Length: 263
Ligand code: NAD
Image 1 (cartoon, rainbow, N blue to C red):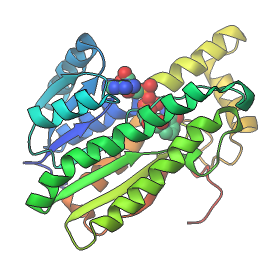
Image 2 (spheres, rainbow, N blue to C red; image 1 turned 90 degrees about the vertical axis):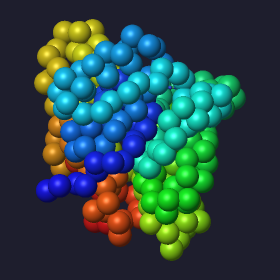
Image 3 (cartoon, protein in one colour; image 1 turned 60 degrees about the vertical axis):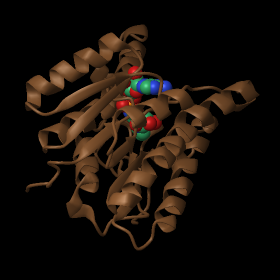
Image 4 (tube, protein in one colour; image 1 turned 120 degrees about the vertical axis):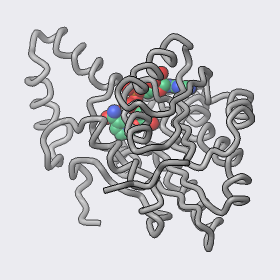
């Protein structure tokens, strides 16, 4: 299937590793020009080189913390014509509710929610001018099944659903679509490191810890394994494409069936 992405310019926030990297690589493979982002210049350079090598696509880098207003303004100024925005960057941290101070609530909101809101606001005028655009928020199954071990993270992921639905409604009747994608447990760099750390400290293999995780922590998973970042990226690439023109205002799950709901 040709996703018809050539000629489109895509910005994927937080794309030097994990799900963001897989999205950036897939969009480049499908013909889009891609801006890769991460906070450190060496990590961005390495990701850009790898994606160029793997896809022969048009890839540039932008090293900055895109949860900052000045960085968001600069990337949009430097790269006019962004038609596809994937708000992927995000942080998580397990912490009991009583131990989460105000500063953490604020930081999680700023990084996970406001960064995407701000970028969407900045790219929207150009999308409206050209009457075409794709804005995708990478939310989480945690938007629906709030993890008690990180309620502040769950709050940000639910907020993304509200923003994307509201924004989709605000551009009704245009060729701009706005959606959220909800991955389930995915073996990204962050999660892979976390599980490998648990395996090392308990003298178990990765596979043992993975099996225990799906037995006890996420028993509703239907695939009973971590998804790969590529499995998430494939859905995102489709939603980002002109082919997905009737998909908007939606919360799309790629969660291995972990959310116990038929719709
Ligand atoms: P990851 O930690 O593996 O990679 C995140 C990337 O974002 C890295 O390249 C990191 O350097 C970059 N990054 C983080 N903060 C940044 C910032 N302020 N500015 C620029 N870059 C920044 O993460 P991941 O697991 O691939 O998660 C990506 C998204 O998917 C997040 O929004 C996360 O909430 C969501 N998600 C992940 C999972 C999972 O199981 N991995 C499940 C559901 C949702």
